[in-house]
Length: 122
Image 1: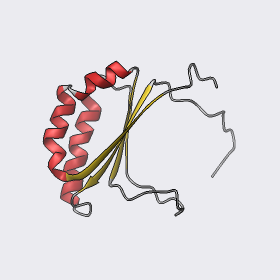
Image 2: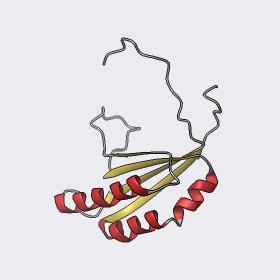
Image 3: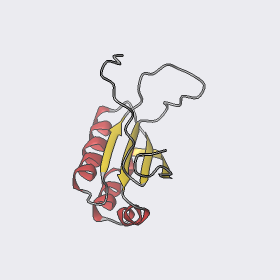
């Protein structure tokens, strides 16, 4: 890993981070993975409440007791406020994603966190 020209860490400029872990029913089925990715990418591209989004799968990081990489996908969306996240829950783009893809997953876990760092200062 290169540390040349590394700048100070940047803080995420959002008040709420919505992190969702998905476990697919058939995680090794390429058709199911493709269908899930198509559906969630539509959500990411069309939803207007979110500021930033990320879709990932487990990284091949060092195995340690504190690392849990048993999920199929991790989806992160940031929001300016708790009110925006509440509006997101009933937004047609979010509901369409659930309707299109919920048959593909076996388990979903959501972690929402509110920022305690303001204006990039600690």
